[in-house]
Length: 277
Image (tube, rainbow, N blue to C red):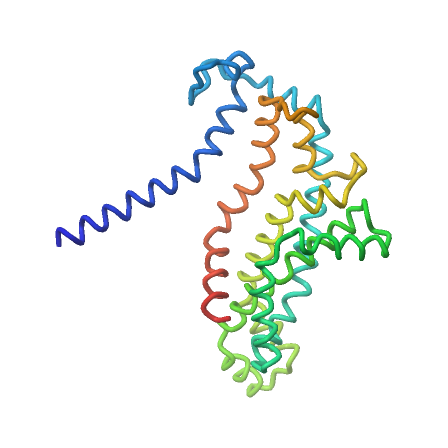
C-alpha cells in the first residue's frame, strides 16, 4: 500500500511538473503583455507586473493591422476546416465500412504521411499553386491547408465511423430505410460529435499555421495573423517585446477558447482513431 501511494504521489508530481512546464511560456507571455517598457528593460524580471498597463495593446494595434490579419486567418481557417470535413467524411465512411486491402493501405499511408516535414511538401505545393495561379491568394492558402489537414481528418473520422455499430445500419435497412435515409437518419447523428471535433481541430491547426502562410502570401493585405506577428521583430532581430507579447496573447486566445470548449471531444476522437484504425 505504501509503495502504491508513493508511486501515485510520484505520478501526480510528474504531471504537475509537466503542466507547469507547458503553462510557463503562456503565463510569461501574459505577464510581459501587461508590463511597462521600464519593467521590460529591468535586469530583475518579475512574474507579476508592478504597474500593469494596456499601452502594449494600443501600440500593437497602431503598428500593425491585427484585425485585418485576424480576418484573413479566420477566413482561411474556416474554409480549410469546412472543405476538409466535407471531403474526409464520405472517404472515412467508405474506408471504415469496406475493409479491403486498399483501405488498409490508405490508412497506413495516412499515418506515415504525418511524419513528413513541411519542407518536403512545400515545393510541390508551390509549383501546383503557381500553375493554378493561386500564389499569393487566400483560396490558394485554403487549398494548402486542406491538403495538410485532410490526412489527419481522415484518420480521426475513420475511428469515429468504426465506433458506430454497423448493425444499426443493417437494422434500419431491414425496416425498409434506403441507403441515403440510413446515412442521414442513423449514421450522421452518431458521427456529429466526431465531425465537430475534426472540424475544430482543423480550424485551430490552420489558425496557428505560420510556415505555409509565410511562403505563399507576399501581399501585406493578404497575410495571416501569425505572419503579421513577425513584423514586430526588426531587421536585426530586435523585437518590440511589449507589443509583440500583447499581439501574441490576443492571437492565442481563440485557440485556447476552442480547445477549452471541445477538449473532451477532440481527445475522444484521437482515442477512437488510434484504437479503431
